[in-house]
Figure 1 (cartoon, rainbow, N blue to C red):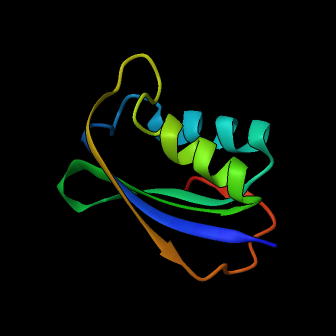
Figure 2: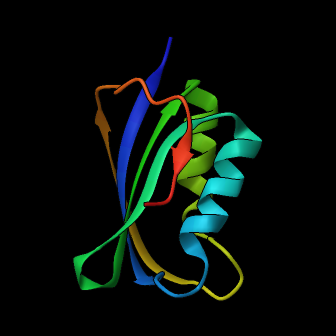
Length: 89
């Protein structure tokens, strides 16, 4: 059964390869969705797939890539949208 989360990541998360690193980690974990820049220098992440893998990506968001400085991560359960890839739009 698929589960999904929508997360908002704040801090120094734009311009530090956060979206690309999130995509790489998502691919490694076998989950799908997207990571997009949004207003206020934040990144929105939608992730769906196996519950354990989704939880692992949500936990990883607190670290991000080496140059990121994550201040907060807020994740909420959402309905799976049926993604079959992970994009960084």
